[in-house]
Image (cartoon, rainbow, N blue to C red):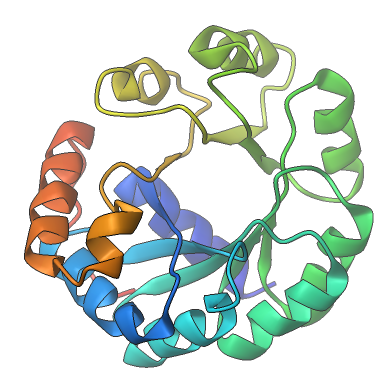
Amino acid sequence: MEYEPHVLAQLGRHRLVPVVVLDDAAAADGLAGALVAGGLPLAEVTFRTAAAAESIRIMAARGDVLVGAGTVLTAEQVDQAADAGAAYVVSPGLSRAVVERCGERGVLALPGAVTASEVLAALELGVSTVKFFPAGTSGGAAAVKALAAPFGGVRFVPTGGIGPANLHEYLSIPAVHAVGGSWMVPRDLVAAGKFDEVTALVAEAVALTGSDSGGEEV
């Protein structure tokens, strides 16, 4: 798929994926602006609220944010995400139906996998970059490191229970492609429209990654 190398390259370059919950699509543009201003022009918008699809549509239409859909559980939700302009789809677990529909729609699939059997199943479906979720309660960085050992070609995107205090534990692992987190996009600040505060939190998060996150179009 043409999308995949570009999307994976962006995720790997920024090292950090903001996991966003939007209760009202009216906040989507302001949040996107805050992400761009803070130096992190990408987002995983979760399908945990009814505003998700419209929020993805608004953010993707800007052209300066790489937008994905998170908490995607069904093939129908893949269609909703792809129709809205999502470039990648993240699932909490491994679903053949979701991965196959992503392939049909030309969007990157990042399914969840926290066991050796799940990683093998992902590889059988042609997926070599997986979400490690929930990271904090699935053994943390040590578990990612142990799981990476027998799977040399697999890359992980740990998400869940990760914040400024333990971010480097994950980023120091060669097999970790990027890390997902929500601390820099607090749901209450987004809902309140306090985008200047969000921008500051995003900039602080970018500084923690030590990555070169500025100046390249998405």
